[in-house]
Image: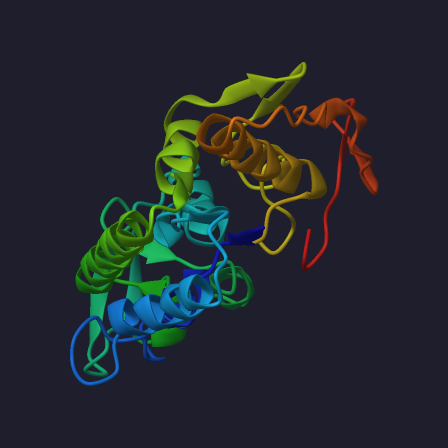
Length: 243
């Protein structure tokens, strides 16, 4: 039995670098769909029929991108100056452009507040780059769904699950989750990887699909029993680079 959850890093490097690093192409001789088909095809040829895969979340909606701009807007700052991909400096509407967590260090020393001292390109995901990121994620997930269906493998819709948590929050086993940085309990301190309890949430989504598709009876994890490394807001949450 195999579970597969890959594809995040194929776009994450592009997004977290402010569009400076490449993403895995969706067309051309080497592309995401072809690589994914090659992977699942090899598994199928090995005679492994019990497989569940997961798609990837909208990486531009994770705390790594939503925190700093949101904090600035709470103080009344709705526009910052940033360096665009063509090296020109322009005002950036924070309702349309995203700042990475790395932007906090630059803002702390006064960057971004004037045109003469703009934020670096690498800490900004601008409107065009946000659109590119969302389109690439959508294309990846379409490929994942198509290839999984081709081989009859189960699919966990992590994208929809995480979007629902970001929009509405969720309470599981008495624990409230949201996509808010630190306090939301879903993402660890790097703003990218889930906490230990966040990974338990993901594991339960895999278990649900496994049980439904393969008529299994695997019990769900009681997320409240998963220990954390930091006590925060009267609940255990695990923080760290890898959750």
